[in-house]
Length: 197
Picture (tube, helix red, strand yellow):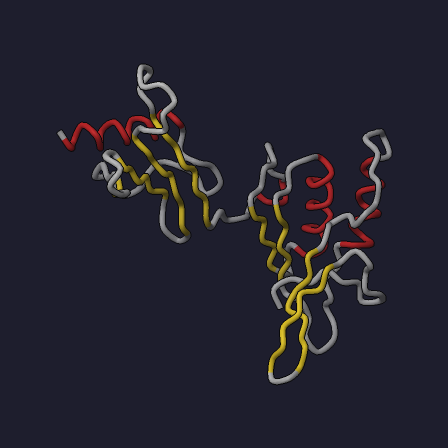
């Protein structure tokens, strides 16, 4: 199973089951789910307790039965409510289950994610001349990491496809959780473009 957030006692009402038919049987492969369900969360001093209670009620993997769930996928967390819920989920499952976070927009990662590995990241960029206006033309670059590979920069100078901008180094400078700095990206792209002349 990919992901099912289900209490072992009851099937939460806010889930959306995804089913498929295999060998004449309908099977649930995963469900889309909110970490906090449909609970109204205040922004006041009781926010923390409300989020913990909501996550305890909603963000539950089935760990027993014939097909225990082994992974939890969290989509686009970004605000304080999400950070609190993720910290609760990681406290519960972080050492025993796979937790995948997709399109995180959290400004600061919770300390519980210190051992996490960024497995895929992509940042598209366009460089335009100050005199060119907004016509969409310009050098295009993509900064990308695909685990287990290191960071790479791909550049499309003439609109005929992307090529890797290699500067002879073994790896582009970037951490396992952060993109390379804008300065590093600009220098690598500039060096690549200058090498084409």
